[in-house]
Length: 112
Length: 112
Length: 112
Ligand SMILES: Nc1ncnc2c1ncn2[C@@H]1O[C@H](COP(=O)(O)OP(=O)(O)OP(=O)(O)O)[C@@H](O)[C@H]1O
Ligand SMILES: Nc1ncnc2c1ncn2[C@@H]1O[C@H](COP(=O)(O)OP(=O)(O)OP(=O)(O)O)[C@@H](O)[C@H]1O
Ligand SMILES: Nc1ncnc2c1ncn2[C@@H]1O[C@H](COP(=O)(O)OP(=O)(O)OP(=O)(O)O)[C@@H](O)[C@H]1O
Ligand SMILES: [Mg+2]
Ligand SMILES: [Mg+2]
Ligand SMILES: [Mg+2]
Image 1 (cartoon, helix red, strand yellow):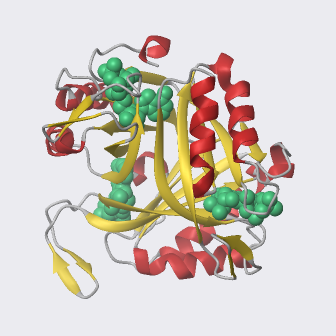
Image 2 (spheres, rainbow over the protein chains, first blue to last red):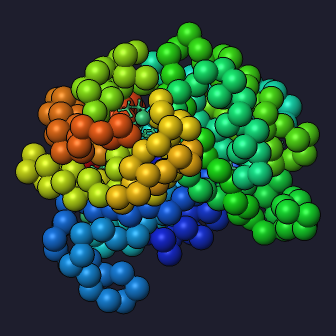
């Protein structure tokens, strides 16, 4: 199993959610984070205003998935969150040893 | 070393904390997240009210541990966070290359 | 590629940011978390006051990096976040399968 993590622009969350839903992705977890990439100290546009602050609000999206679906999930997230402007985000993939569904105790792919 | 991550119902945090304490787990990190699982779009009860919203508040719990304790930590979290209702949560395990205690610089199992 | 994760005292974030900047680290992601380590139930000083509460506010810092830079990044974070007092924090390293820059679609080391 794999965990796909994405840090995206907040207003791209709906597009990402819909793209994942269209793929049949069953669940996801989101959280509020702040960050910067390679343009630290340069301006980035957020809600129509230019910022030179270092940290900008971003949303972290996490999706647990069968390894077989990783590429299409990464592609869906990248496609849906791309605006073409700097700060669009980063997606990364981590290997997961085990997953458990709390309600049923199911493990592995059955827990997804 | 391993990292056990759980996304649970907020009001189960105390039970999880106590179950981990009973196992002698030394530390943990929690954060506020939002999420949905397989019943996206269906109703789920939160604080006595039914919600059809997609995202519900959850708590993420993270525990760094020696590999030898992973199974009992997973079982303790699953046991303590289970209510039997949908949305009870998900637990997953990731392999960790290295851990460091900042104050002392200790590494590996000594850092836990 | 690797992900270096640190949970540090909030007022050490600026020092960590500067230490990483001095190393040429291009980006990072931070979030608010709460946690405790081995002194759960004992007092820890936060903003000049002593707390016996279990959870204290911490900042989680995440840095995606080339494997070759992991040790110097870990050392920089540990050095910059150490005050010598309990609760200084924990740093851990996870292996990452893949990274993608959303704007360009670049993958692997090019995406960092
Ligand atoms: N090396 C990194 N480690 C951890 N998080 C990162 C890293 N780089 C970027 N991020 C996170 O991803 C967010 C978006 O980064 P961003 O899209 O600006 O990356 P970038 O490499 O600078 O690409 P671009 O040139 O398109 O802006 C940042 O705000 C930060 O939260
Ligand atoms: N595939 C997933 N990827 C990432 N996070 C997930 C995933 N599935 C569930 N989660 C997280 O776990 C939380 C709880 O999920 P939930 O217990 O509803 O899982 P489920 O598989 O739908 O099980 P159940 O049928 O018991 O409801 C979600 O709110 C979400 O934060
Ligand atoms: N085993 C653990 N699992 C997950 N998070 C942890 C763990 N131990 C510590 N943390 C996180 O790191 C933060 C700082 O921990 P802390 O520095 O108190 O570790 P410690 O091992 O008790 O070291 P010290 O003796 O120097 O206090 C905690 O508030 C918590 O968020
Ligand atoms: Mg950038
Ligand atoms: Mg569910
Ligand atoms: Mg401590």
